[in-house]
Length: 164
Image (cartoon, rainbow, N blue to C red; front, side):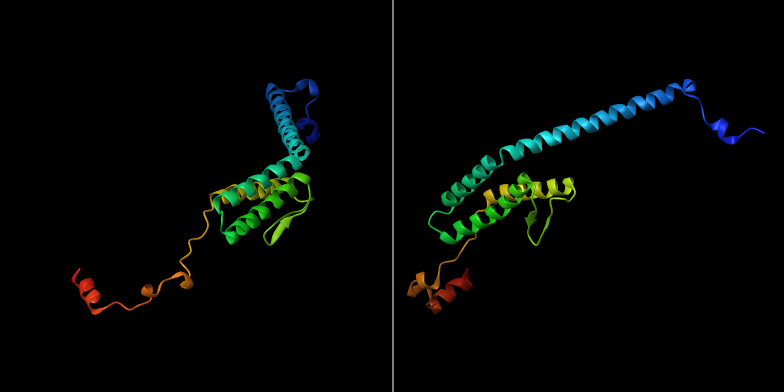
């Protein structure tokens, strides 16, 4: 009686063309994965190498933006700088390989690299979005109004308003 396992195994010299093609495809995919990982590590190595230069450029851009856009309004300047700094520290933490803190949570240095990269990219996107912040519109203070701004309308003004 033949053994059922002997029939399912083929010696190496009986390989088919299909199995050779599959081996070739697998080796190519493994090479592509390796090249993508090399490319990713090269980019991360570049970012880590120039992290202080990138940090100083981001801070300088934030300072110039805040002081040019909100000249004379101290609360808007410091508000914009605070939010820029919040996102800058998250991006820089990714560059240096540390814990990325953003909002109430964050990711440790041992977390999934894709999650860390996604969080850093989100922080960088919000950092760039802050350059479009125009500040809140504020009404004049009651102290800056004139007495005529507080007077009640006259009967004549009421009549004109109802006629229109």
